[in-house]
Image (cartoon, protein in one colour):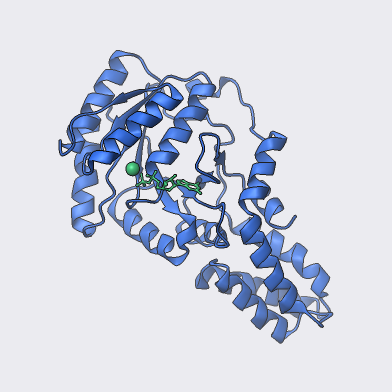
Length: 320
Ligand SMILES: Nc1nc2c(ncn2[C@@H]2O[C@H](COP(=O)(O)OP(=O)(O)O)[C@@H](O)[C@H]2O)c(=O)[nH]1
Ligand SMILES: [Mg+2]
């Protein structure tokens, strides 16, 4: 049992479900209006319906391979049960989608598994503009509310504004930020952050990074260097490599996920900007294809607009 497991409380406050419903509104609207058209005038699921369904899923950014998987499973059902009605299709789709989503075992913002060591170290990666710094600020806010001491490391030293931005989040949320001047070595910032977190006995360290996607080797080297330096202080750090993907970019998010998982050991995903996009289907495809749990989803720009991903709630919200 991890140090932070002593009280497990699940964040299923009605406000959270409401925020999720609202965040997924556009995806849902798009998906259902297309789905309604796909089955229009049909009482049973036939080849036409399946073709239309395939198109609905692909155009909802679920991704081709995951779509084919879903279609195949529904075809199997149709083969067994020749008169599968189109009204039954919704329930079936819902079950299949839920099965495809990787389980997020974190049902609590403070549910960290890091053995006996403090602090728990999260390294946040992802390309520029996806919402890394914002997600870090929101996460720090959630963790602080849970009573944890959080420190942020401003290791995106590439742009001047980046350091200021994370400092601003630190002030807003009330957590410490370790920073150096713009252009300084990101690994050195990460080192300082961990060192001071250990000295101050802080609970969680979150390291921001620059997210330059030069090429695979360059990315591997850059992230590898930050990791190596952290391991001089905490041998199994980072405990979590959180890849942030912008859900509104649809297929680009798949491509980024591929590149980052090839370059480093990503073990958690955050999908942001699900509010205001109809491309929420990416959550389904990415979760299925990369088998990495979606841990957090971003449903807005404000401090409270971060949610723990819960596949059941997600599917419920999608089919509500
Ligand atoms: N609507 C919306 N905007 C977001 C969300 N997350 C981040 N953003 C916005 O996306 C932009 C880029 O975010 P930032 O954190 O600077 O990205 P970074 O470059 O990866 O650190 C900012 O304008 C954020 O306010 C989200 O969940 N929803
Ligand atoms: Mg940033």
